[in-house]
Image (cartoon, rainbow, N blue to C red; front, side, top):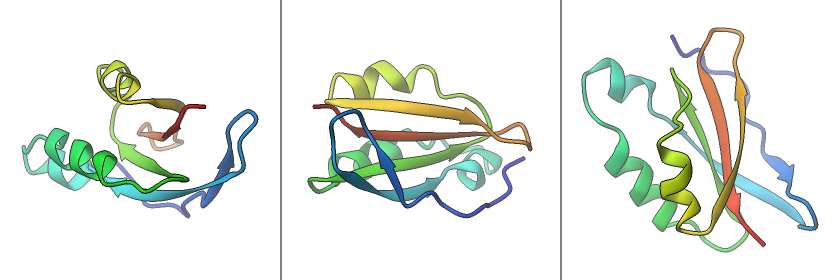
Length: 93
């Protein structure tokens, strides 16, 4: 179960300035039996410079890491108290 918590608006990647994150909670899509992959990829492709993606999901999206990694993103992940996951994807370098 995903419980909405306050978003982390800024994180710092090593050697980078503050990054603003756009939040995408895919829990409702998954609960409806829909794949969130298209929504994730569209959101990631539309990010402007200096903006990352804050993904909320009920499981750790390990297969997504190399997919977005090939598109120049690095990630930081954390398990939530409710068992879900938050992952911050930001541009590398």
